Amino acid sequence: MKVYIDGASRGNPGQAGIRVVLCNDAGEPVKEISESVGIATNNVAEYRALIRGLEEARALGADTVEVYTDSELLTRQLSGQYGVHSPHLQPLYRRARALLRLFKSVTIHHIPRAQNQRADALAKAATGNESESVR
Image (tube, rainbow, N blue to C red; front, side, top):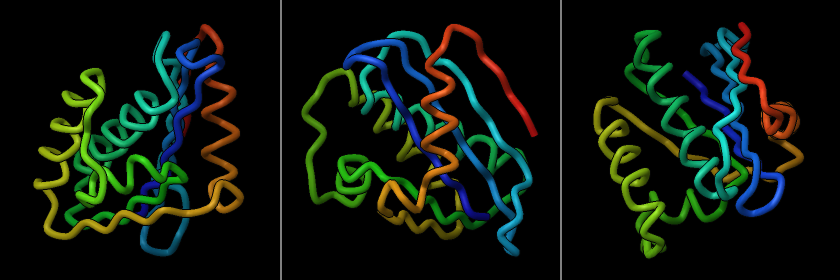
């Protein structure tokens, strides 16, 4: 399953939102999630999007995932290239690592924002006060 994620924050910290697009092996969207996550930094929002995406992938029965994100920080922290020094990111990092271990195979791809436009635009829209979830 392909999982496209993005988090956005109006202000840093500020009102934040996440967007997750889960696609089947043919690349067709099977579920889309757009949610407000309250006041958060953009990095917290990125981790919240990853966690939500991995939880949904498991709920849909995926045993392998390819995660696509435009967050270089998230990609490098999860690969071990960067340490996780911010106290507010450490519990999110641990939760994400625990979820990643539940899959047989995981690949995390850092992609340019231009290739993640749908998730990026919808995460920015979710920075409003209302939460929504759509399929």
